Length: 138
Image 1 (cartoon, one colour):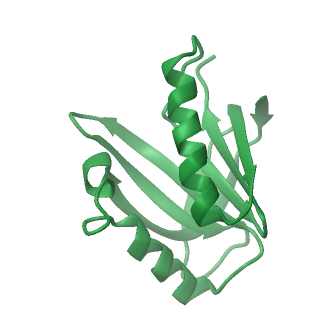
Image 2 (tube, rainbow, N blue to C red):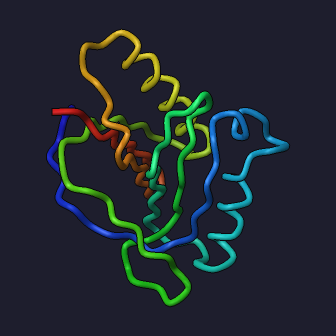
């Protein structure tokens, strides 16, 4: 389902990474980022994970920020751009659901005429629901 999202900001911790690093748990920078987030922010009811600043080199590079909507003194401010986003969602534990959703997303775009924008994509986590919003080309 495509939705129009208004611009908003989150406050959190970020890291620059790429597909190659993230394909191996031993080199992944995202797992330590989540640990850092929880050490600073605890376990809030609503968490955002934003993918941005994509660079399409031989390995897809990007930045990721894990954060919350409320301003936080130790949080870096990241803007989620307004625009059209395709929503994918699932229910259950985020650590199980999110990878499955990303598999579905990748498969969907391989077989679709719709195109990703690779601008700001984000995940939104609540207690038992994971939503992934993918920025879309007009």
